[in-house]
Image 1 (cartoon, helix red, strand yellow):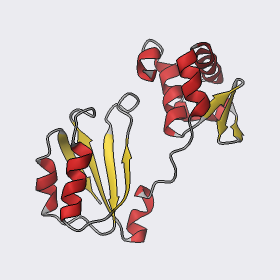
Image 2 (image 1 turned 90 degrees about the vertical axis):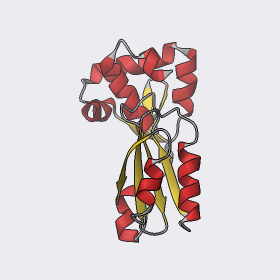
Image 3 (image 1 turned 45 degrees about the horizontal axis):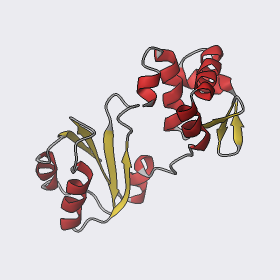
Length: 164
């Protein structure tokens, strides 16, 4: 829905992506991380657009009731263990999919991991509307055994795997 709304405005879509990816909300023409106000110039730098584009995006969100409700209520999803997994001796498997809306990718992967006695600590799924190449990232208790990789690749909809 968000992608479709901003489809004709690629720079505004960049801003919307930054907002969604970081769980930033918009209220009263301002941007917030929870209750901390974020200056538009910071968003502009992150999205590689000018400050006016950020303000135009916020105004467009405010004018559309559905978008307004989404962006007023959005919150950060929480911390990701992906970047620190190796320091915690956790395993990470990242799946690139052919169709992010295909059913069963997460559940089939979770089943394979469970059958290998790997407890899932975290699963993060990119929004297919906002990510050009959405990924499923799963962090597990231990390193991923090599023999599991071909099994995961057999799951319908999985294009490639990165393990680290």
